[in-house]
Image 1: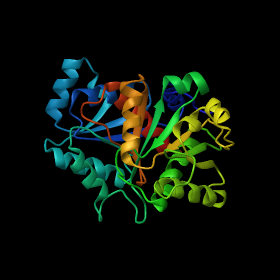
Image 2: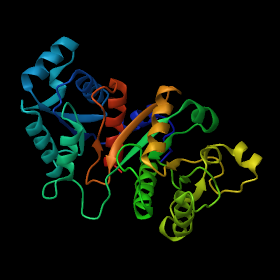
Image 3: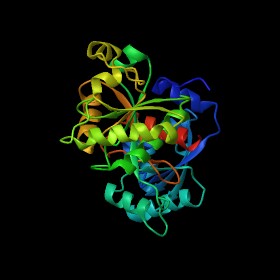
Length: 306
């Protein structure tokens, strides 16, 4: 498989693949319906909207969308709609779950339900984002996979290993055979005052046996993770070589700031999904753009097909 090196290539790659079905929980808001209609129209996914049927009909008319591209399950109650969408995935009648108007706390509660949820015992729920950043595209001509920026506040070493595994698997699904993963910290030197540096060094040692399908190194500061010039200036010899495909953050604060800086300040594009679950779960904000929701549908379908 030729590596996917842009989000447009991600979309194109899915047009020739078997369609995956996306079940949208409370899928009766304009941005979600537009994104879902685009995904169906571009043959990226089959879509089931679980939500208020009358509202869906009205929105399709107002937005000039073809209502026939969707399967619609009429459920006006938002939480009940989420429950039905979740169960479509749990029962194998859909491949990807997507958040619509349902609140994030309710959406996550359905996923994490111990009896009927989507998180296997022993798995870790985390958030993986694939980012198309102008500077990375210009320098390396590729995408970045980053985690965790939205769910786990302060991952410990075993959790970081699971986050790393999910990121490596996501990169593999994009055709990157042996992705380079940087375990980020504020410095390349191990310091007792910065526990993340010690954890990164230990994971690097363990990765020789545990991650033979990736190149893993840390601790690395962001500059040497993505810039060969920075490595040369600092005289740093790292197998990541300033060309990381994956960035694993030490905590949610650093990850979230990077994520938002990449979009708000750098004009980056992104797609994101919750992973660790039995099926990818698209978690976007109600305020997210149509494009971000559409690309996240595509990302979920790529993960589901890998």
